[in-house]
Amino acid sequence: MTDLVERLVPDELWVLFRRVVPPTEVIRPQGGGRRRAGDREALAAIVFVATSGCTWRQLPPVFGPSWQTVYRRFAQWSRTRVWARLHRVILDELGARGEIDWSRCAIDSVSQRAAKGLLTGPNPTDRGKSGSKIRLVTDRNGLPLSLGISGANMHDSQGLEPLVRGIPPIRSRRGPRRRRPAKLHADKGYDYNHLRRWLRGRGIRHRIARKGVESSQRLGRHRRVIERTVSWLAGCRRLHRRYERKAEHFLAFVGIAALLICHRRLATLLRA
Image (cartoon, rainbow, N blue to C red; front, side):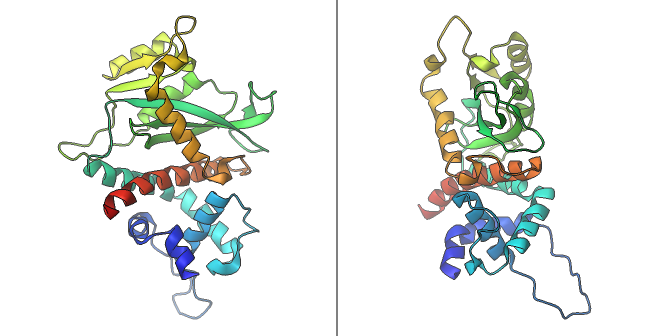
């Protein structure tokens, strides 16, 4: 069991997680009662659920905590935005090493079927079946910088401004923190003049495919980078279909997938 926990939650990830997790509340100050399950074991179980796609009830008992305890811990950490804070901490570590390339960023979205819950809607490209959209902005290397979810019927153009605003101020190797890319690539779903004006007003150059003028594929390798990141997100099997009724839980799994992508890059640097 120890080997499995250490494989799912390496030491460097555990150190970063302890920086953002809220302190444990002592329910019985007088002592006694059952010993509280360890946070590292609970985190490893949550990562297992996210990557394997199993349900909470199917969680193997080898982790130690029961599936009810793991789910309660997941709900608590999602409510306190632990995953977003951990993602930002990892981005800071990458930015301090000069691994965030702000020269060209890209924006895109991907639709997933959804059984029920908030922030769902009829998917116009999937026979009107209920679904949700995962929206993201990546840097030139494909590292996810900003994330969001919405109903599948929400147009892509409506997600550009919130996503760009949602890029956190990230540390740089030299100079102040940075949160604005030099250039943003997007497909025809974002082909609107008001979005171009908004980007120019923030000092961001744009490269948006124009409807009826050029093919989205002319964006070339810069567009393929974010499509590769979408395939990385699919490595988190829990995102193959949305089963969470609560939108914050679905967003939490998106955040877990994103921070795992970023942590893999950081772990490669630490091992070098």
